[in-house]
Image 1 (cartoon, rainbow, N blue to C red):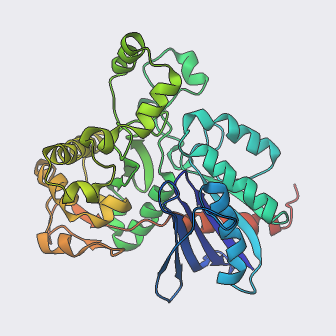
Image 2 (cartoon, rainbow, N blue to C red):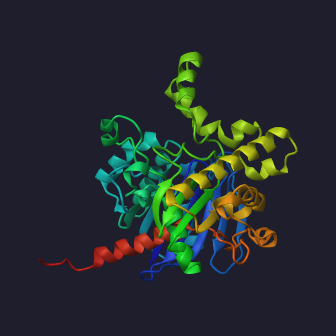
Length: 405
């Protein structure tokens, strides 16, 4: 028996298969179908074997051209990639759990309907997350389906890090700071406790940097504050999202440019961030390779906002014991790490250049010099492992005999 994890998005579908072996599932296979918005390709990484990449056709009866056809390709391919294994449970990354879901939950029709209503809060993610749930329920009708939320890790923030300065009835209606990337932060908190227990027990800022980017303040491994708020638009600039933005800009766009909600949604989710500022690309790698001034300006903007965020979160913590870089940019771009830390020396942050240059392509390690007052780590995240752990716990709870009063 196996556990399957699905992370469905608009342009990619990530998946992993784990051995159903108790509290610590062992990964058997990881993969993704990437490039759904351009040239689709299948990437597979069986445990202990080299990763493979295969271009996929986007036309004809076997075409993979959108999330639905990618889901069909993956679910049909599992018996080939992992023969003889039945799927006992499926865990799904769901970006928004709203105020009501503070922990993973078994999906039924009522849960699915509640998650549908949260779709407008994460339009780039939630509809695709739920499409993955529906496809898995149809393919594996007897399997347990578990929704695991990016917002759940941030539940319990103190009021000063949870509320907006708006009328209180709006907070009661759900207008509050939720925070996101919680599955990633949950993994980093757990991994840091293994690698650096003193730092994990203290005050840590984790920077999850990728096409979506945020930073989180951890106190003893628990979320205290996050740069993201009501939606996945706030905080740091991202690949196509602007990050923190004066709401007066939106009022001006509505009044002076006649933009409605649909036009603002397209602007803020798809045409801003690194892509909008550079006019070139949402991909940090492409911007690093470019000699154009607008590429350099976009990178400088990203780094400046990241420095501000780390400083603000350190203030919320009352000091800093560790900084962790993770996510695609955080794990693979030594220049972003170096430029960020360079502007934060006043917090006691330093990096050792050779150690920093050595980290990338899935490696992890300490990049601050020995004896530095703040330890700086690069730790690859693993959201699939977190989801698999929650699946194992849910199956164990379902199998446990009922308690008697």
